Length: 113
Image 1 (cartoon, rainbow, N blue to C red):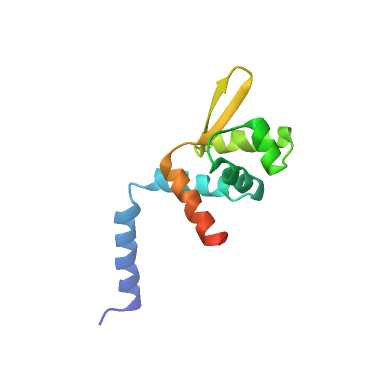
Image 2: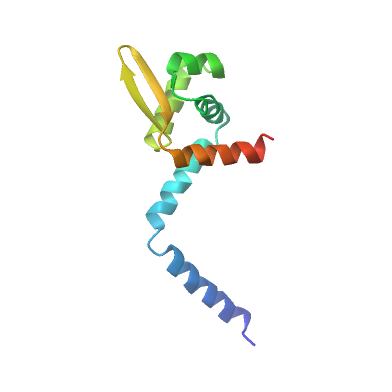
């Protein structure tokens, strides 16, 4: 029979193998989830779930003032959650990739049903 200490050592070795080369990915995931956890940013993501939006539309849909909204959008973009493009005087924002969209869908399914 294995002792608790040896079970712990086995688990530790297994986790080190599993996560050994994943430290950077784990940090990226943590930062992404952290930035998504703010109520205002969740509102923004909810509005973007319907597709690409201008800053003006996001301000209207979320009720967040443009100066504050721009700060949230910049943070979401810097963490890889959103991408943007400019067209004349308008900035358009959307999810950076389908996996982020799916992650948000799962969050929405778990907490908004």
